[in-house]
Image 1 (cartoon, rainbow, N blue to C red):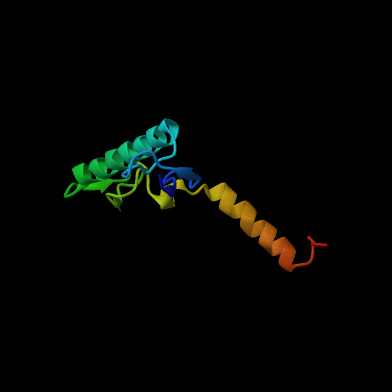
Image 2: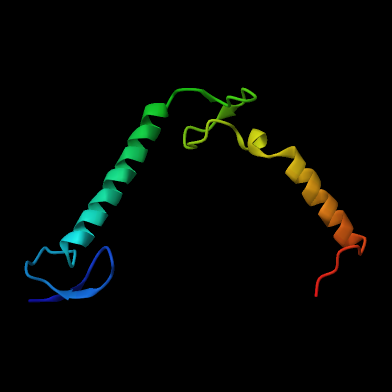
Length: 99
């Protein structure tokens, strides 16, 4: 037997087979689930290749790699931006102080 580190959890373990890379069936199952999820996302991106994706809000062309249906510009709430700018202005004017 040989000591190896699990490819999933990195625990040291004694191998029972020369090609064993996971310390337990649970680690093997979790690694398999992750590989399936990654393949699903890659396949989903490949399906989008060559297709034009438009923002549902403004119609701007979007990347095939993003999962969102609206662009970053549309995703920003203008009220949040105004509030943040007001807070920055208050900090610069000395109305808000930090300890």
